[in-house]
Image 1 (cartoon, rainbow, N blue to C red):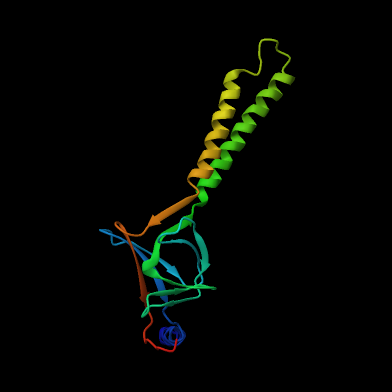
Image 2: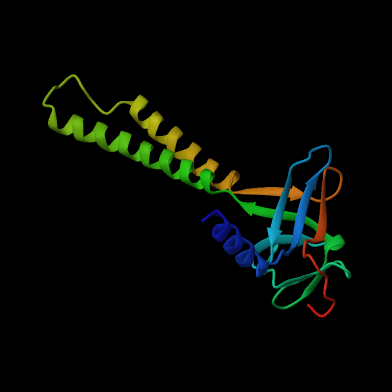
Length: 168
């Protein structure tokens, strides 16, 4: 049974191929981030003020080119990469909902408890305003993680295929 499993694994691994990747390296750190073909990235070219979004269709390692759907970009021309952070929007939305709920429950409690000594106070309004404002600011300010290529980060194109075929 072990021999059959070993033969099966070796035969199924024959069809596997490695890939070409765009690797982000941080100086002084052995950890790297790999971006594979088929990934959508936001990038800014040196000298431009706005970010472009592109789907990586191919990577030409020998020419240092990244092939997008409508253009070729030299990897040395990329000044900055931008990645979306999901947690900033989620935490910001939760804080805004918390602020609205705090105010809603305070108003509902004031309207239904029948106690003349309770009221919707300025502290209730302050909790609502601070929570909603902090949530909105967090959702907008922590939306992206930007990687500036240059002093601390470097982009490198790697070909991790076993046999390099110049036609591929």
